[in-house]
Length: 69
Image 1 (cartoon, rainbow, N blue to C red):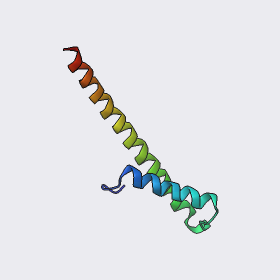
Image 2 (tube, one colour):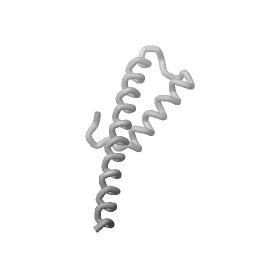
Image 3 (tube, rainbow, N blue to C red):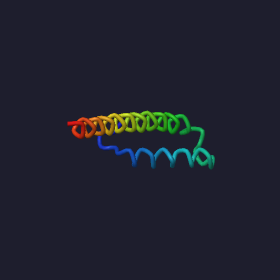
Image 4 (cartoon, helix red, strand yellow):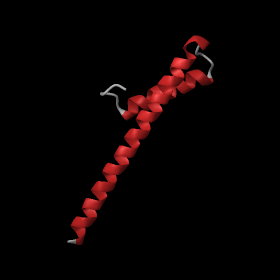
């Protein structure tokens, strides 16, 4: 996966692939590679979401710890 890919870009590309598949505008010859790319994008987005969730959780804990002092 590209190192400079943002969540928004990945999500947009994933939506485009899904739309192409739904509209049946992808030839059978490239369908497998589009599905593989979609799988990679889903994994990337899930990882980004988990990472962000962990980071936000840590920030909330820090705030809570500071307010307890």
